[in-house]
Image: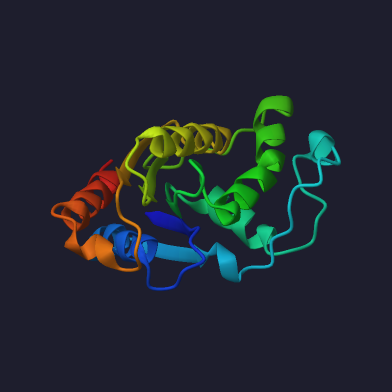
Length: 190
């Protein structure tokens, strides 16, 4: 089974990295093929709302999204990991999601949804942030749900951790590493 992961944190070695690593560890231990993208290191332009994708389902912007589109089409399991910034997903994740407008057009306007694949398609959203209120997780999950459904992922699980701000301190959370590892295991199940 092919697994694709999108790391939306600009901070290398931070809480998002640590949590995503645990989820990917579950996938790799099961012998699945994993490709991971660190969005901050990629050449990704923002959606220009030009409308070109409405006719073809393809984005006309030439950048690293071409590789992401291919990975999304081929994956049966998709993981999005993001810090929570101002009650939402990071700009890196949001840029990638907005550029999936082309896939939305392909599915809903052109009626060409991404095929389900042999094992179906499932998603996992991993969120971590310093605030203590649940609204950041709720807002991030709402955006991720629209993304997942647009790329023909009918079901996803959200795992979020609040009150975790300083770099690397998620390892001190009493359940976070186990929680996200187990979410990764559930993601791999048929």
